[in-house]
Length: 178
Image (cartoon, rainbow, N blue to C red; front, side, top):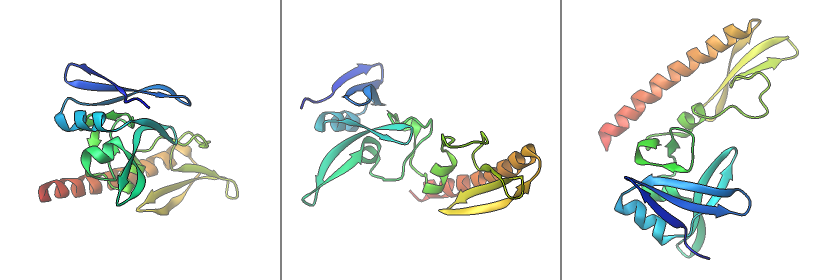
C-alpha cells in the first residue's frame, strides 16, 4: 500500500485519503513538523463513526495492533473534540483539548432517528406531551413534560446553557493547570 499524497497550501497541509467505500477524503492539519511527521509515518485510512469521518491508522503498542485517529496521535489524548464537528479537520485551532465526553455529547449533531427536529426533546405518547431529557456525565436526566413545544425547547436550552457555563469554567481551570 502506498502512503497518502500530501499537499501543502499556504500554512495548511492536505493529505488525500482514497477509500473504496467512502471515496476521496482530505485530512487537514497544520504545517507543523509534528503533523508532517505523522502524515509521513503512517498510511491513513477513513473511518466513519455515525455521520462523521475520521483519519485513522493502525499502530503497534506493546506488541498489539491498535487503531488510532490522527487527532489522538497529534495531541496524545483520547478525548479531543473537533469544534466544527468535522473529524477530518485536524487544525490545532479546531481541536478542543479540554473536552470531556459530556462536552462532546453537547456538541453532537441531531440523530437521524430524531422525530421532533430538536435534540433532547421527544414526544411522550402516553401523556401526549413533549419530554425534555439531556444526557450529562453518561446519565440520562429528565427535566419535565411540556404541552407547548417551544417551552420544551426553552427548558432544554436553559439546561444546556447551565452545563456549557459549568464546562467552560472547568475547561478554563484545566488550562491553568497545564
